Length: 337
Image (cartoon, rainbow, N blue to C red; front, side):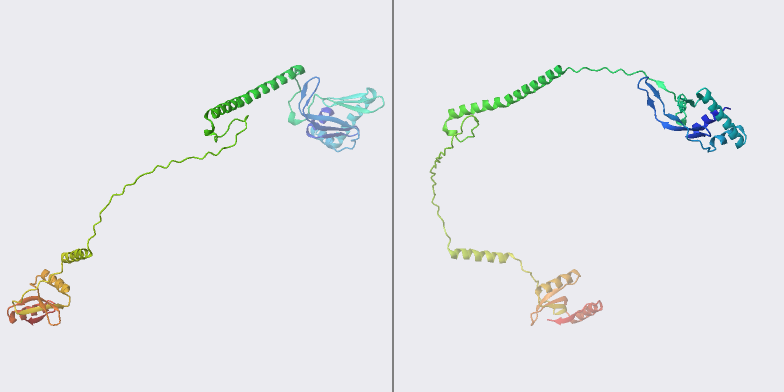
C-alpha cells in the first residue's frame, strides 16, 4: 500500500499527521459554505493545511504503517524515509509532488514550498457521504418606486381625512344649531313666564334671572260644630252599680261545700281531724273512694272538722270494726256523740 493511503487514513482520525523530514499536515473544522458566483453549497468539512516546520517525529505514522504491514517500527521508519526522499526528488526536478486524496506540493521560483489541498475529499466523519451541490441562482425582481405616485397617494389620504373630519364636525354642530334656534323661538313665544328655564342657545347672551313672586290662594272652609248633649250619671248611682256588680261576682264564685251528716248513729270511728274544711272534704272523698260510708261529724270545741270512717248504732259493732281497721294498718279511735 502506498504511503499516501496511510496518511489519508490517519487524517480521518487525527487533526495532525507529521511526515518526518517533510512537514506536518493539519486539519481544521470548516462549516458549510455557499459560493457566491457558482452557487455551490459545500457541506461541513475539514480544511487541510501543510506546515513545513513540523519536522519532529511523533511516531504516529510509523506506528500505523508497522501495524498495517506487520513490520517492525524501524522498518516502517525506513519506508517513510524512502517516501520523503521521493517527494523531495519530485520537487527538485518537477517542482511539484502529488499526494493522491491529499493535495499537491509545489516550489516557486524563490524556492518557497506551498500546498494546495484536494477539495474533493472530505475528512470530516460527521459529513461522510455528503457531496457539494449546485443551486440555481435566485432571481429577485427590483421594484421601482414612483415617488410622485406616493406623494399623490399621501395627499389623497390627507384630503380624505380632512373630509371625514369636516363631516364629523358638521354632524355635531347641525343638531346643536337647530336645537338652539328652536329654544330661542320657543322662549320668545312663551314670554317671561318660563324665563327661568335653562338657556341652550350658545350664540345669544343669557338674560338675567327675574324673581317672580307666586300668589297662593287660600280658600276659607267653614266647619260646623253640632251641639252634643252629655249626660252625667250621679256618683251615687255608679257606686251602687259597682257594689251590685261586686256582689253578683261574689255570688257566682262557688264555695267549697262540706256535706255535714246529721248524727243518727252515736258511735263513730274517727279517721282524722282538720282545722281546714277543705282538707276534711278531701279525706272524705278519698274514704268514699275506698268504699267506706264516711262522713263529717261536725266541729269539736277547738274548731276541728272530724271525719269518720263510718258510724254505728252500738258500741260492740263499732269496737269490732275498729279492730279490723287497725289490723289493716289504719289508725282510728272511737267517738261517742
